[in-house]
Length: 29
Image 1 (cartoon, helix red, strand yellow):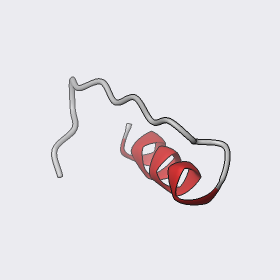
Image 2 (tube, helix red, strand yellow):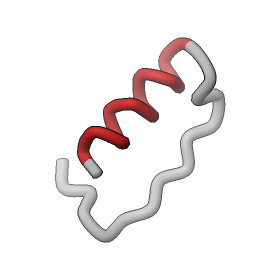
Image 3 (cartoon, one colour):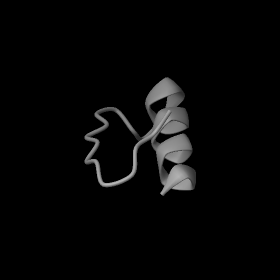
């Protein structure tokens, strides 16, 4: 998945799958 120069808004990032998605996106940069 290419996410360079993109913006992502993750709702529910405090727990569960939202947190996992937020962490994965943060690792990708």
